[in-house]
Length: 204
Image (tube, rainbow, N blue to C red; front, side, top):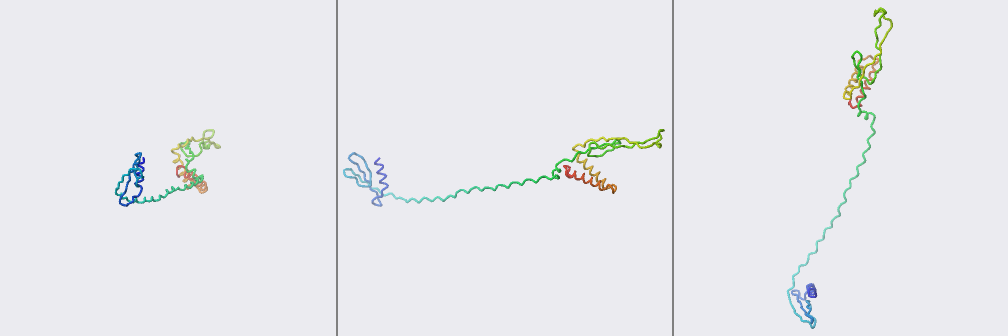
């Protein structure tokens, strides 16, 4: 509206005197009202109003917004070095995770027993006493024997380690307390059995 527009313009224009504001209300022949800070044009009815100037406080300059540093890029952790491929297991290391070979407990005809790695030990010929035709043991001629085989059974898994330790102990006795001519052979057998134990799940 003309009235409102003129009023805003009036407030935006500085007054002639620093201590007052002069407002002119002008009404033309058509009855339109205009409010301004200048005298009304000829032919208009004029009303003058003086009012004290409004004290103004200069606006403080807007505080400058501190520059915000861009967020630091997230640190990228270095990729872990590829784990070195485990060295190929040596035969000894592989054997350390395996149970020892099977053992068999054999019983002889006279009730004795022994341990062996053979499920069917070799047969043997036990000597027989010969007699003469008259039944006299002193008159026997020649020699005779009977072929026999011992009865063998596999040692259960839960008793395998103890059986191998017993076999090692027997081999050591045979090595240390036998004749000189068989000492090297018996020592080699003891070392073989000892190595089997050390490289097995029996843990030596």
